Image (cartoon, rainbow, N blue to C red; front, side, top):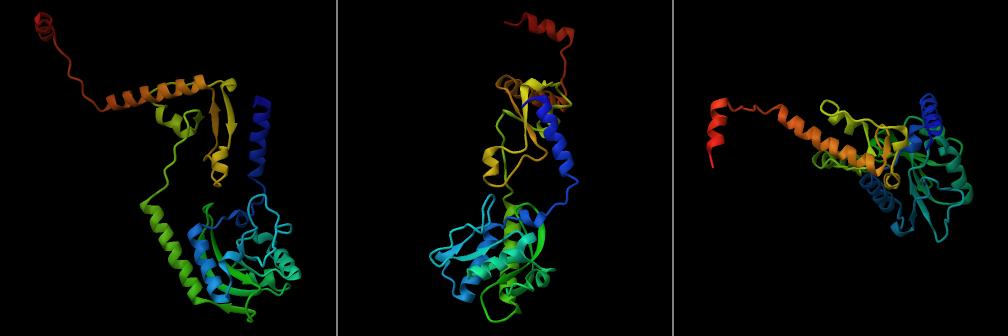
Length: 264
């Protein structure tokens, strides 16, 4: 990537900071929480788990998704177009059980005939957003209802997931060809390290991260092989210097050096 293109990309990122963010549209449900909700819906409404489909994924098109074979939608859709989605499913007679925003659930579904299940469940999604969530569905006879067993199942699952995350926090390691701010921060007090624009290319996420909806916090730079080796050497040198900072070295005096000189 040239300097000009990099500058354009950085400026675009700067401008994006000031655009309104629909954060709930980027909320990917933790698998354990989704399974608890799906299991409840299947038991409550007699849904065949093998018929459940999830058409809402990055790059997906729910209107062109294949709903043949008696498919039932159980998924977390973009909240900003929830009303449109419900109207589409009602018109096409596709059964659904969808996540919905808690505070605006009435206004989101008042004109499309969807039934509402109010649980006010605080779900922490994969992007870190905590959203108070309820549900809308084509199933059942009640226009509006509560579901204590569903709400409690979600709460218990959320607590378990949080506990497991605290006990087993994720550990990540980047390839040596990726330069991050934290890598420089670890060596900056011990070793001088310089990078020219021709040695690097900016990236916000590795392709392997995108597949699991992860990114490099703060972005990073891909390094040339030579520069990556130089950085690795700098890290080793910094580690040695840092270790030596807390070590008291006792020197030899002249007499001791003379004794050593006569030995052997």
